[in-house]
Amino acid sequence: MVPAVYTNPIPTQADPPLNPDLALVQRCQQGDPEGFRWLYRRFQARVRGTLYCLCGAEALDDLTQEVFMRVWRGLPRLRQVDIFNTWLYRITLNVAHDYRRQCVQKRTQMATLAQNAPEPVAAPDLLQLHYEELVRQGLAALSFEHRTVLVLHDLESLPQKEISEILRIPVGTVKSRLFHARAALRRHLEQQGVTL
Image 1: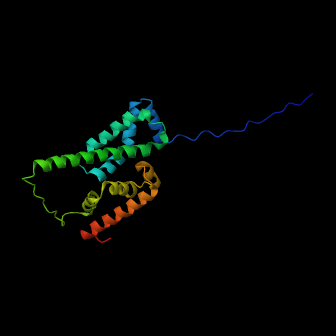
Image 2 (image 1 turned 45 degrees about the vertical axis):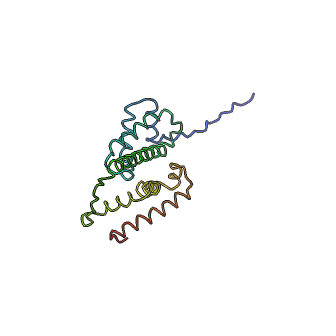
Image 3 (image 1 turned 90 degrees about the vertical axis):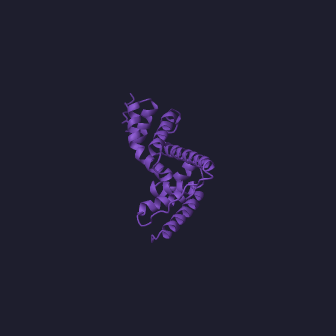
């Protein structure tokens, strides 16, 4: 008679819990409007902050709404929920880029209409400008590419590798743009009398 062999089942580890942000994304992909409201609350401050730094305050509400409209329309097609943050930043930057292009077109049209009567440009009152305003002006003077890298890295605290993925450029290019953007911003602040 062969003795019975008893084996203890090996305990299996449970799958790690899904990141709450990714769980929200999955709820939205399943068409849950309440999930999307929570997703909006979770990310809207970050999106607004990025848009403010890139585009200013004038159309901030409309731009934020446009970002989340694109997110809502695009979520069903997002196959890798783990890249949601990168995808969201990419949408935000695309909206900012589109807005800036529209602003350039409007300025060109206005300049054409007002060729014979240019608007006077008032000199800024440097005594009343505080540090944040000087930084905002310095950011506005940067090219869109340099400003984008500086905002994502220094203000949004994204690592260079993630910025590389968002912008679809090599990490070396991110480093180069960041170096030049910081140098230009430093020069601007020093010209305004800010000692760094």
